[in-house]
Image 1 (tube, one colour):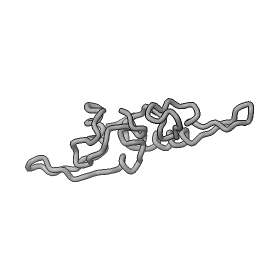
Image 2 (cartoon, rainbow, N blue to C red):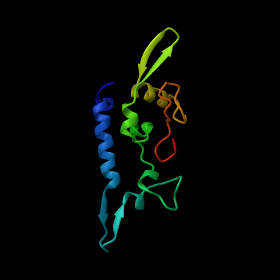
Image 3 (cartoon, rainbow, N blue to C red):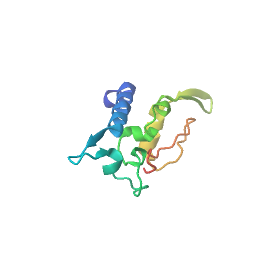
Image 4 (tube, one colour):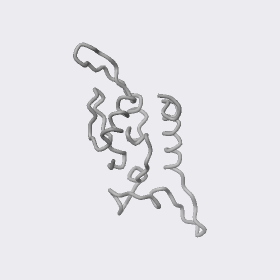
Length: 117
């Protein structure tokens, strides 16, 4: 994987998304406004937090979590033992975006941080 799917680009994207999720602004009336005030939060529309906002990004396959993005695990496939990482999880999720647990030794969910696909 290279280009926009390089690990350093994905980490930078996570940092940028976190900064944007925590950003606030002030209306002309002086009221502070945050992402949760204006976002689409399909699973918690009554009282959304920034984590409930539907933000579509490749990093959602890791629930916007840098620790999950960095995970590796040893996996055996018959006689061959290898290491699985974020690439294996991403390939699985692109093919099965509604999965709650991938088939790698990582056993990560493909569902987004807000709970949707």
